[in-house]
Amino acid sequence: MLYANGYQQGYGQQSMTPPMINAVIIQIARKDEMDNYTMNIGQSQMFMLRDESAIFIKSRYANGQYGVDEYTRKPPEPEKPPVQYVTKDELEQMLSGFVRKESAVNEPV
Image (cartoon, rainbow, N blue to C red; front, side, top):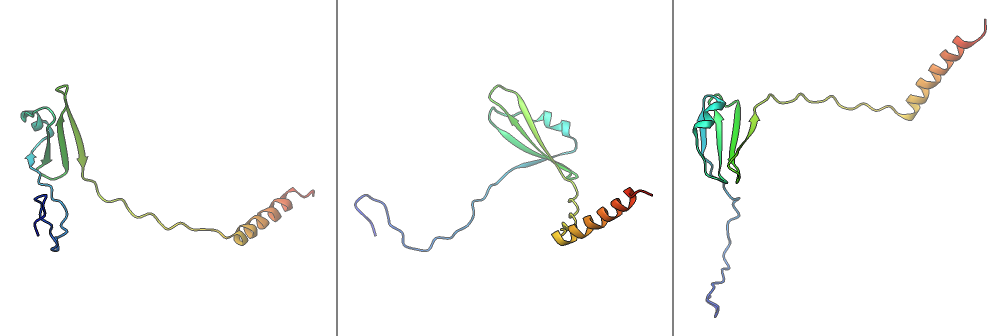
């Protein structure tokens, strides 16, 4: 339906797809190869080592300097063992045993 303001009112179902980001990743053999790529102010470029062990994002700032963020691949961290808790009764039992042993040591002979 066309309204007086010229905009169409859509009543159809619209798809809910997430936004997509397209990025160009340049493969390099060594980190120092990034120096060969010139960039404009405010531009960023992504680089990846050929063995896929690291990703670099090179950015050129307004003052003309460059910055490089490095993300290296590392093995996943091992899972931590579950935390073990001691109940109040267990703690009192352990402490009472300790107090009995301590008092037996301090008794005069």
